[in-house]
Amino acid sequence: LTFLGVKYANLKVRYAVRGTILSFAMVLLAYFGNSIILTNTYNFFLSTNSISFLFLALFVLLIFSAFSSGSETGMMASNKVKLRNLSKGSKGAMRALKLLQRPDVLLASILIGNNFANILASAIVTIIMIDYFGGNVLLGSIILTMVILIFSEITPNTIASVYPENFATKS
Image 1 (tube, rainbow, N blue to C red):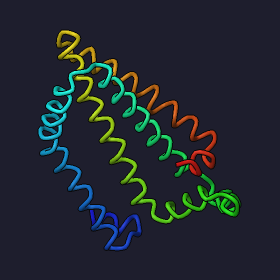
Image 2: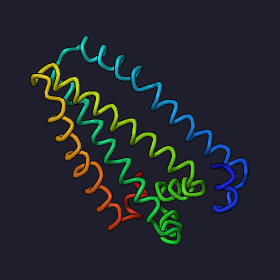
Image 3: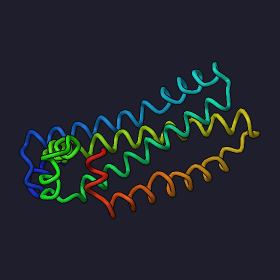
Image 4: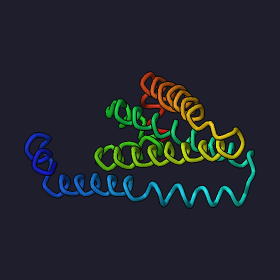
């Protein structure tokens, strides 16, 4: 991956190595961290044992996932000239321009946050389905997939692609 990034994407070696290490770390986290995260999350939420708390946490995670998805599209689709003009009177536009100077770090951060929110939402839905709805985890997974696709992926990305500068300045 490092050599491909240097050769075809014109990345500096330092950034390509950093990207490769980040990718490797994400794979290790996904492989080893799933059991740790799910077990600790399950024990934490079992101690509270409140369905309203679980639904509140799920709602917050879905909002964060929607914000992350919209931020990704808004930042990448925004016009830098428009952002420079907006930056004269807007701190958000100045922050967006600063973040866009390093799009590799920006995308990695957004995607890690979005994946974390979606995986944790999946763990919470599993807990809800096991404890309160007779263990029908497949139904919970299907419902969560549709909710994430509609409300946390498609809708925010559509809004961000129509109004990219507005979304980028608020991200």
